[in-house]
Image 1 (spheres, helix red, strand yellow):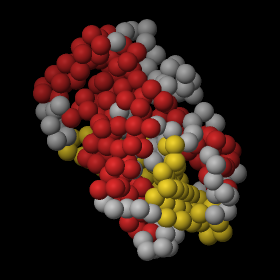
Image 2 (cartoon, rainbow, N blue to C red):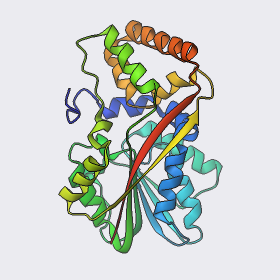
Image 3 (cartoon, rainbow, N blue to C red):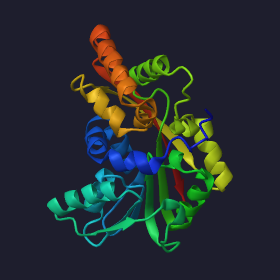
Image 4 (cartoon, rainbow, N blue to C red):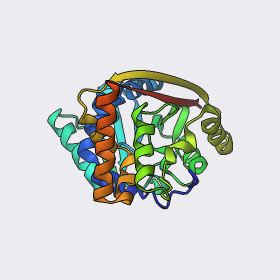
Length: 269
C-alpha cells in the first residue's frame, strides 16, 4: 500500500479509541520528542499559542504553564475522547488559560497573523494535503512567530515496530498495512512538504532509547499508535496471535529498550 493512501488508516476511528493508551504512551515512550519540540518553540509568558492536533493535551498543558501570566493556548483536535481527557487533566491542574476546540485541522477557524507559536506534533502525516495544512498553520503566525512540527522518523519504536509488522504479515500475507507516518519519516520528505507550502524551515532530529517498562506495555503502545489500525484490519483472533508473537520476541530477545527518532521542522516568520 502506498503511504499516501490514507483510506485504510481512518484516523477518526483510530484516535477515538486510543485516548487512555495514547496518553500513557505519550508520557512514557515519546515524551523526549515533546520536550524537544517545546524547547524549539521557545514559549514565553504572555504568548498566544496554538496546539494543532493536541491529542490528550500533554503538550498543551506544558505550553499553558509556560505562557502564564497573560498568555493563552488554543488547543484543536477532532477527537472528542482526546479532548475530554485533555480538558479533565487541565481542570485538575487549574489551567484555565486554554481554549479547547473540537475542530478538523483542515477547516480550522482561527484568525491569521495572531499567534506567537503554532505547534503541530505527530499529526501532519495523517493529513491528506500536508502542504496545505502547513501553509494554513504558517498563516496563523504574526511576524516573529514560530511554527514547530514534529513527526516520527527512522527508526521508530525499534526493534518491535518491524517485529509487529512481520508478525502481522505472517497472519495475513496479502494485507497491506497502513503506515502513513512513513510519508514524512525522512528529512527529505519533511523538507519537501515545507517546500511545497512555500514555508522556509530548519530541520533537526533527536533519537532516544526508552526503557520498555514492562513487556505488556508494548501492546499498549500498539493500541496507542497507528499500528492499532492494522490490528483492526487483522481481526481479533489474528491480532491476538500477533500480540503473542511479539511477547515471545520480547522474552526470547531480552528486549527491554525501544529506539525512536523524531524529526523536527521549525519555521520562523
